[in-house]
Length: 116
Image (cartoon, rainbow, N blue to C red; front, side, top):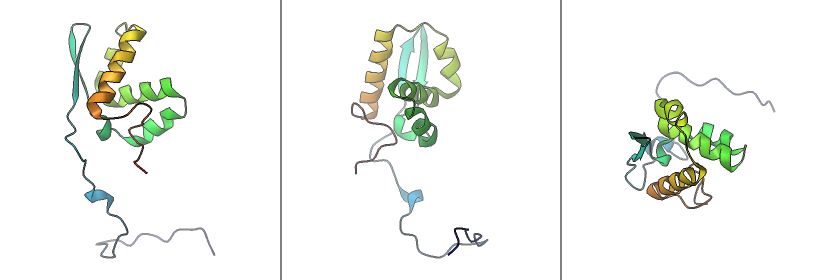
């Protein structure tokens, strides 16, 4: 038996699926999280809308790397500017706790985790 994959047929795929990931919808409204910091407004995308692949890679680096990966993804183009502003650790912890609460994520829960 070979481990090579068969080429995908071109055109309409009318075979049944075991699971249609394209049809999965969020259980709640995925409203962005808005913060005031350093005299400015910052908008974090909801954790459940973030691309899970970079978050999983960042999680390999531990809790701090995971938090930075989440903020990087959540802030997008704002990240470098946000990161250039001084941030005391106690405020960073408060920010992450508030963001996690807003997104409905439990302590220690990754945005890519499942309920299984």
